Image (cartoon, rainbow, N blue to C red; front, side, top):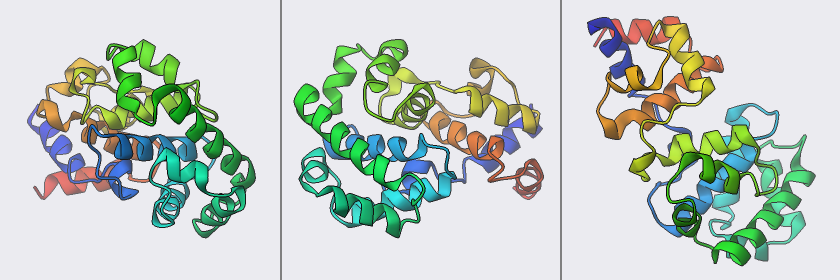
Length: 215
């Protein structure tokens, strides 16, 4: 257990994908929408780092709310995605971002806390509602829930299949409840995000093990 806790502590030094995209995640409309944008970008078959870079470019262009995203022209969205090197899916994704912003405004009045309330914080219902957004499927819904658990605490502990796969690579428990025993409740989202990086090969098991040995 001591070695496992050391590995968990090493994982907690990694940034979440939301943090890397420049999102100061909080239970407020703008950052929740920004997470939705990031999830839309990460839901295509593209490297996570490219999706993060594209999100940063969209936010730098001022498209941090559904109102701003919808007000931007399709070409402006394409251009921002291109600056983030999100070129393979840029045109289709620009369309989906505009449609998703409209859905967010029409159904949720621009506030995803309303979606949270409608689902009563229940993961299955949240996943169902999230997959109504263009471009977001089950994997994207998992990404959203994995990241948002830091500000929607009733979701904790939430680990999707990629997080569990990363845990297996490190020899950590492969069940959510046992993983949760390794860290404080508030840190579980960060742990899950770091485990996904291991599963995707962004961090090797060897790197994490060496970092754990020096702590």
